[in-house]
Amino acid sequence: MSVTSILSGNKENNQSKSGSEWWRSAVIYQIYPRSFADANGDGMGDLKGITERLPYLARLGVDAIWLSPFYKSPQADAGYDVADYRQVDPLFGTLDDFDAMLDKAHASGLRVLVDLVPNHSSDEHEWFKAALASPEGSPERERYMFRDGKGENGELPPNNWQSVFGGDAWTRPEGQKQWYLHIFDTKQPDFNWQNPEVRAEFESVLRFWLDRGVDGFRVDVAHGLVKEEGLPDFDEEYQQSMVEGGNQGPMWDQDGVHDIYRDWRKVLNEYDGDRMMVAEAWVKPQERLALYIRSDEMQQAFNFDYLLAHWDAAEVRHLIDESLAQTALAKAPTTWVMSNHDSVRHTSRFGLSNPGDRPNGIGRDSEQPDEALGLQRARAFAFVTFFLPGAAYIYQGEELGLPEHTTMEDKYRQDPTFWRTKGEEIGRDGCRVPLPWKADAPAFGFGPSDQTWLPQPQAFARYAVDVEEADSDSTLALYRKVLEVRAEHHLGQGELEWLDAPAEDTLLARNGDVYMMVNFGESAVKLPWDDAKVLAASHAQSSDSELDGNTGIWFQRG
Ligand code: GLC
Image 1 (spheres, helix red, strand yellow):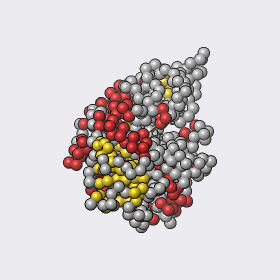
Image 2 (spheres, protein in one colour):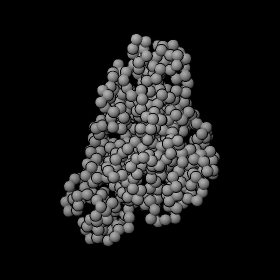
Image 3 (cartoon, helix red, strand yellow):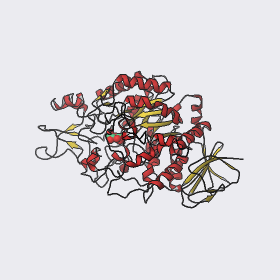
Image 4 (cartoon, rainbow, N blue to C red):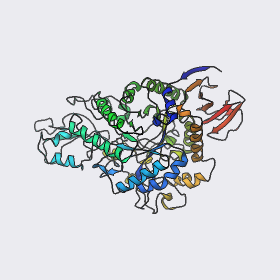
């Protein structure tokens, strides 16, 4: 058996053993507050619901949680339209509830990251209301991106940019001459990041939450804050999607964004406790992404290439190599992420006829995934993800093997993508459905009532936490086990060595004293050695000497 390559891109990770730079190897659990747990029975998750369920997360074995937005917001984009960056929306509770949650999380050994949404505010933010009420060229307007329109009477948008959610990226408010830019929904006006006042405001927002004790920030649309000088038209042959387009276009990945993150890093460095930032930057290629994690910028960037991977051993291996090589150059950790609140859950993506395809939502008329096969592969894929050196993310419900809601009736949909494209794009509601905690309770135990802001599919009964806690073969039991082995063997701080796999569709690697073998093919593959002592397996295997198709194991030798 020959070692084909040693990826030591995470030497720096060893530091995290001593407790510093915890983020280099952390497992971070994404909480989508609207759908995690509802304490007051109004059908919407809340901060008290999170506090009540912290023991569940501590038991799961994660190091930190990241909360999607819970700030004051009209909820036009599920809270990614912030009306007040320093207030909790009454839907989710109060600042006191936040402080109580934070204290209890810290007492349970969990660090807490919050979402920061700096590209745009809500149109109901005081600043935007003041901008609309102020004359052209006023300081109030300079905080946003107002421009005159084209055409004889300025009746055409200032340029041809399209919104990520569909339709024009410009709106001309009733009775106004000027248009304002919104890369997302009409209700999400983009800030003008050339304006020092905007920069000062966000540094103050950072301090507000750092002073309360948060451990860091997930930075929304981190590649979008600065736009190309002059706002030139955009070659329409590219789709202006964040995901497919990556850094293509005058609204994405401009070099100027890095000055902002250098300033923010200085702010974070004033605080103790190794506070961190992670960039949501849909940027290609990996070399460009690595710029966000230079030593004086953010600590992490989401590895979306990995999230978009197909169920294909060669593709996955290639992505891993590329990610580790790039992040090693930046001396930063890689992040391994399979699902989030913007993507079809990977359990369902892996059950499609082209496993791993990433449709923008799955609707009743779309191809329906094979639920059992998707789950089987998702469980096996966890054996790749949590084996790798670096940090890993879990999207709530992933630890239950929860599938996407693929048959939701359109009338329930809330994602602006669906409504702005007139249903052409299904959108993201299917991955945002409230979690099932108890199979036999109303709303599957999401809260004390039968209310849920999005309907849950019947299938969720099989995935409820109480059902999975009682089943030693459940996905929850598997995640607990995998995270335990990962921690015990320091896999997050380790080094990856690829070994010659016994079959083309199979990955075989070593990290310290643990071996990983994952079979992406359909037929069983012989294990390379007969002295394998299995530490964890995605499924009970049909034979001791073979690895079944679509399954994975970790083992030691001798
Ligand atoms: C990010 C968020 C997404 C949101 C968008 C606009 O991509 O993850 O949910 O719609 O930004 O804020």
